[in-house]
Length: 376
Picture (cartoon, rainbow, N blue to C red):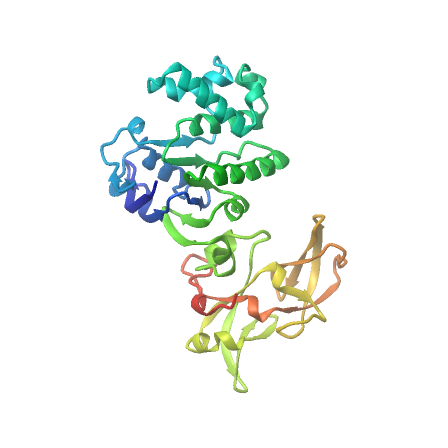
């Protein structure tokens, strides 16, 4: 059993810069948790604190119920893979993977057995006699992972391990990481700024911003039920569309009113939204919830926008639209590409909209008003 419990973790650097602020998280035995956020959100700091490379300003970290306070990095039984591979160029692949075992005084025969076992797991047994400069980027990354795996640590800490790889290789390594985790079952924290990696790898996702947790949940929950405008805009590509307006009541119905017209408030959201009648709000709509008219399902009624441009991506087309002065994106079937400057008629799936409070950070929407009520 290898569990990780992080309680009220703080890190403030000299000068007052706060990298982590009250971070709380429980990681179950064998769980892979993805921590995602923009640059400077505190992701790497979190890993360095768990590994013992930095000291926290406050809070605690417990591995298998044991406090790590005062425990040296070597004695923590955690293995960290850095963004940069940090391989020793003068050592062979065998020597690089074996290095942490030699530091611990493991017997030579046991080192050889574990290195070869790890190399087979990663498919690099044929590379054991080569040196890092002779390897591709993907092969170097496998060696870095092997150096962590060979330790048989209680917890893996992965700090953006795929960020230096190109697109196709990155996709391949992401699949291999998922398969490796299934085989090993090691408790893992995976840090990334790439929301696609977080969605595909994490059993749970932690969205971090400015050192504070914005939301924790399954990939499905974070995507479909974002807790705030920041989470909604950060998770998903293309990003969620936001329309600023206000809640009004006319003819016994509640409406969201903005520059391009009115959109009916769905029945499931009426009870919560009614308390905000007359106040400013923001409507959030995923690009895939925009349906070209005519379309089936619960729709908002027809809206009209002007097509600014269209991007073809192979699997779909992204249409960039001007709706009453607001730029929005619609995700359309690949064979549907409206012409620039054309009028695009569409509806919005009302079962897939979100209502956010007016935010305190400039134009960014705030809290999701109907988070507990949103349909699946």
